[in-house]
Each structure stands twice: as structure tokens, then as C-alpha cells.
Image (cartoon, rainbow, N blue to C red):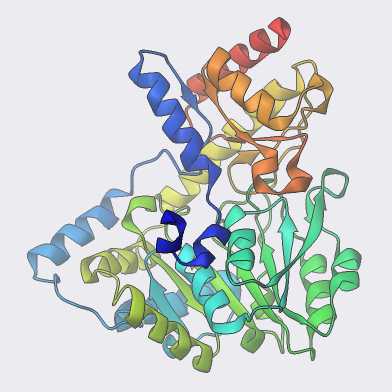
Length: 390
């Protein structure tokens, strides 16, 4: 009887296991246990001081009132200049919509484009909210397997085989969560060739774009003929360590941008103006902190990957971007969830089961190395000792 109080669609909505594991880890810490946190995908660095000071100054100057739903124009102008420099995409401020974080871009994309019965192609394993939204809107999930033997890159031939007359949306994520895989420029070109002229939109999740360890990431929106069919998702949380600021943006064609703006008006009204002013400083101010953070992540990546590869039963490819290791744990003989639970409860190491990112994640764990080198080394030692007990 009580279930009748809620809309049926709520039963279709998934969650995000990182926050569930964090809650379990915090409960263990409350009991006095020491936990090394590898579960949350959040830079452990503070937001750069120049960005914080810009927000403080904005507050002092009275920027505490509503902003336009589409976003504060000076920030949209700064974003347009930024994407030209870093993505090679010519964007107009009218094509930019500022939103509270990256997830609203996913949500608005689905709400504006996807009907029940439409097919959505997405990476598996991939960020769990993709699949959650597909089910929520009663669309048809069409996973593309992301395989270790292909360096955790999307197989374009498999993608082509999944495209039908009912395909409405394809989701790309590069650098990728949870694998750290990065699509090559050739991959991106091939995806564009596969979808051009078919009336298919591409949601390009580029939130980790600045966190790559060699070369640059190519945006599919930079390819002639693709910009009007691409929704770029990006934001400030990863590159500028601004997760708690909740500041992201989309770049789409102008018509779709107005649909997103209407959704903003009906859900969030606007993003706080002083936060948007901090975003201007992030994009236009010194970029040294980004470079320093990526260099530190690279050091940590090498330590955690080498350490994992030295542990019996585990092998780990070196990620090319983001800050996640995605080790293969099939050699341990137990499932991903069982191992994640075992490490949390018996080794004090909070990691995520690969299966929480999709069925193809079974046999893997996700470890966020957004943690100190000291803690990484402690965790590696704990994991090795715990597996010996197994």
C-alpha cells in the first residue's frame, strides 16, 4: 500500500555506489578503524586560492542575487573562449548552458531528447548514471563492451554493429570513469564517420579532459559536421578541484541550449552568481595548479599500478587519463563485490566493485588514486597482506 505513494518511475532510478561505500567506510571510521579511501572520484587537492579569492571578492561586491537560468554571460563567454583553446571547438555563448555540476547535463540531455523505446548506446563499464537514466526514461539500453585487451577503449566496429534506426543517443566518455581509458583521435574520427547523417546525437562526457598523461584528448564536436549533433559535458570539479562548488556546463546547438535552459528554469533556476564568477577566474586565471595536480596524479598512477602488478592475483593496465586504476582481480578467484567488501572490512581499504559500473566490470575493482602517496603505499601493503590471508 505504501508503495502507491510514489511514482512508478522511482523504482527505475539507480544510484552511485561510490557514495554507498563511502557511507560504509565512514561508519567503520566512527568505530575507530582506519580506512584508506579509494572509493570517491574527487581530487584531494584544495581549490586553487585564486579561485577561492575570486568567489570571496564576488560575495563582498554583492553578487548574491539570481543569475540568468542559462548562466552568467561573462562566464558563458569565458567558456566559449576556453573550448576554442582546449577543444578546438568554435562555440557561441548562446550555445553554452551553465548548470550545477556535470550530472544535470546528462539529465537534461535525456529529458530533452530521449523517449521511451529509443535506443541509447553507452559504455559498459561506464559511469552508472548513464544506465540509470536510460532505465528511468524507459529507453532501451544498448551497451558497448569496454575491454581491457583494447586498452579500455571503445571498439568502433562493435559500436557500428549496435546502431539501428531506433538509436537516438550515443554516450562517449574520454578519459573514462572507471577505467582511465582514452579514445585516440582515430577512434573519435571513426565514431563521427559512423554517425554522421543518421540523426543521432552524441553526449560527449569530457569532464576529465584536462587529466591526461600524454598528448591531448580530441572532442568529437571539433569534427566538421558534428558540433550540432554533439552535447559536450564539462565542468570545473575535476580539473580545478571544485567538486563541492557544483559548477558545470553544456555546449550544444542553440535550439537544444534553449531546451536545457527551460529545464534549468524548471528545476534549479540558476547557478549561484558568485560561484560562476569563481569559474571565470578558473578558466582565465593561471593554469599552473592544473598542471601541478596532473603531474602529481601521474606519480601516484605509476606507484599504484606498479604496486598492484606486484600483488599475486592482480594485474593492472596503466590508465592514460583521469585518476582511476582498474585492476583485473580474476586471479584472486573471487568476485569483484566480494573482494571489495573483504578489503573494506578486513584491510581498511575502500574500493569499488567493477560490476557497479556495469556487467563488463565484473572481475575488476576501481581505485581512485586521488590520495596521498603515503596512503597509496599503506593501502597496497594492506591489500597484499589481506589477499595472502584469503
